[in-house]
Length: 258
Picture 1 (cartoon, rainbow, N blue to C red):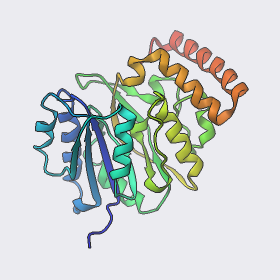
Picture 2 (spheres, helix red, strand yellow; picture 1 turned 90 degrees about the vertical axis):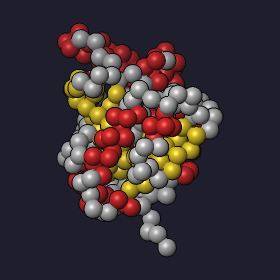
Picture 3 (tube, rainbow, N blue to C red; picture 1 turned 120 degrees about the vertical axis):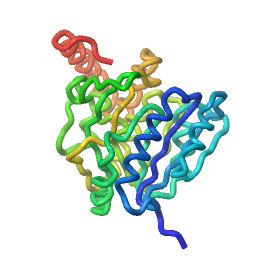
């Protein structure tokens, strides 16, 4: 009987031929630095792409499973990945995002053996051409705490989703109708967590321009819904005033972010 993988990495794709290669190349380089590849399960959940996404994926033998079928959007696909994952931990690394460097898996796997419920790090923002923009904690108002708690999300997304690894057994399903479902998901994971570990290295490069950026107004409304759910109506109203004021001050000092 095969042992359970320690980590499942899930990549969501849809017509992702422009950027999938950089993601898979980063994983391949990181896998070369570990001896036992069976501790890593790699899933691609594809929304029935019409371009060369699947052809590109087929060139990488480390991929454990590719599922390609119509879905109801990003978070529906992420739920499929969660349901199919057999690893103890789950890590979402979507098309265009990258493992930060070739040493990440070799550094991460021994720390996962410590059995914390959540592991997190900062993230490096990159542009479409691969140029680094800067660390998320410096490029946005979201400073990264050393001891992360769910209450730290009162002012929004404290940790980039691609820099957040959780045990599968504490991870909820995503609300597929909410564009800020990733915030809700991380909060619930942290509420369910007994031990949270801040990693001393970067997990990922994050490609700017996600779904919430492209649907900014609805994303803001959905974020309010999430914060109201966890912090209450009055706190959500007050905290959104703080969010807008903080963003205004940050943009005046540092220029537009995102």
